[in-house]
Length: 197
Image (tube, rainbow, N blue to C red; front, side, top):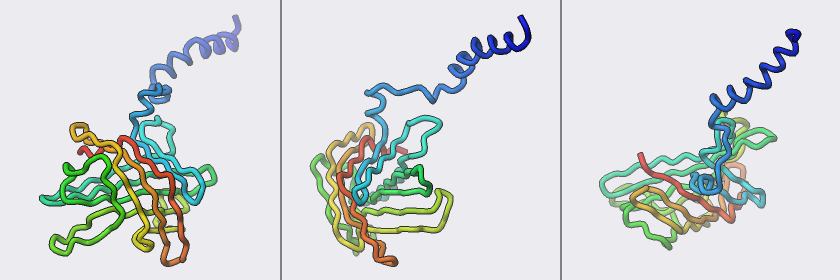
């Protein structure tokens, strides 16, 4: 057997072993595993937006949660980032603030954002949409907030205090007050969002 045929045979036999052993994160998830990922989906001005964690090594979207808990308040910041095929980066998210996260219940609905004057903490919910030319860019092409429209609604649909996860629905209108551009976020859903350390 000549060297070319030996090399081809070696590639055919060993490639699956190398790929199977080294790149395990490319395995497809079953429906149950896929349903447990942190995920945020919505429509942004009628266009679908979706980001999820746990999509593997080659994923181009992700969900981030930052939780700050103090003695009498909490502030959860959730944002999801998608890198569209046409370039740039888009983030959709919200801040949820309250007195005690353990007081949240299924069915709780938030529709405003206010500063608690006694504690200096924010309570309620605030939505935002940002767009940048690239994920590394500090420059914004859009920076819109529901604070400028006062139109937002977020409802808790599931909460697990032991696992420290929650799910819910949301929609809001956000305004980039510098560019006078309004963005509508509808059909919003977040699943299995973890606020654990």
